[in-house]
Length: 224
Figure 1 (cartoon, rainbow, N blue to C red):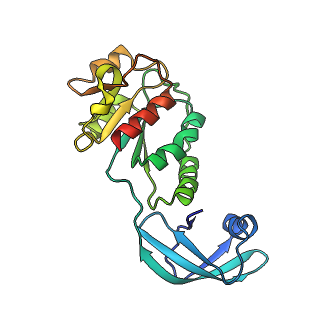
Figure 2 (cartoon, rainbow, N blue to C red):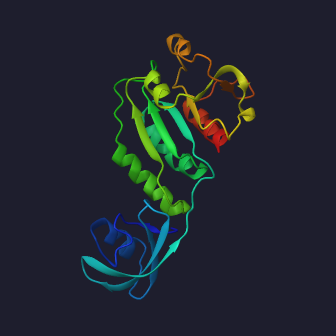
Figure 3 (cartoon, rainbow, N blue to C red):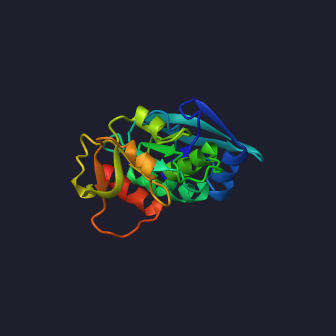
């Protein structure tokens, strides 16, 4: 753990209880007098606290110092991911966070299962734990486009697309291509392809059919 997350990190004192108490004092076994780092994942500051006391249900931390220490991806990037099962997306979140995606845009596409329900709070908790482990100082943003790829394109008009028959994906210009849309299981429908217009199309350098999760990793690496 590089730090622990607390939304009030930066306050002069922190009262630690409930799940934070269980995590720091039971799971991590921190003791009185130790120094521990905290972040609020909203700014780029690392806050160092001293453990002043540990009671039966809560502990008290006092702020000792704060350090400007941004740990952020080298550039802004948007991964547009046509929706697949939520549990499959959740499984990939730590990897996408570590790769450095700054925005995950989840798009309801023609071949997505329209019964899918996205729990953004759960996904954010997964990303928080990933940041604690990797050291990343700011959470990626999760955006949901429930009306389809046209709604996504209206928000990211310069987005490229990952599909068959495109340019090699390793030729992406990372300085000018900041958003990339991938399809769900089964790919894009013909109606969706008509909406691509003159957008750049990129493809992996082989003819294998990719799982949506594999395509997400390839796309994320191409953007960073």
